[in-house]
Length: 121
Image (cartoon, rainbow, N blue to C red; front, top):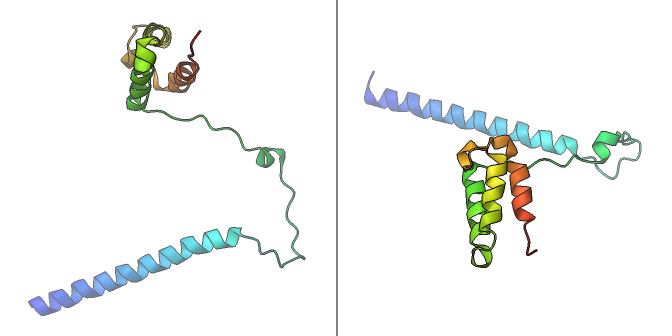
């Protein structure tokens, strides 16, 4: 195959790929537009919402070890280090070894909530 015919084939493949990307983007856009109900169509009644849909559940935030470590360090150093002992106690409470690496990731939200709740007492 000559260089020109190889180049032509690559360009054809690139064009085909681009066309497929456009089709995919239009399909995704269509999905979002299909969810919208126009206000000018009174004959379509909106289905009543179920109780589960009416009140969205509060999602439990996820934290990475680095996020938790940064929060703990910031709280421990806050106000001249006045919370350092309390932060250490919380880490020991959630991680039996007293280290952040001993704390399971599913306990991070509860730990963060307690750390954020530390105040001058």
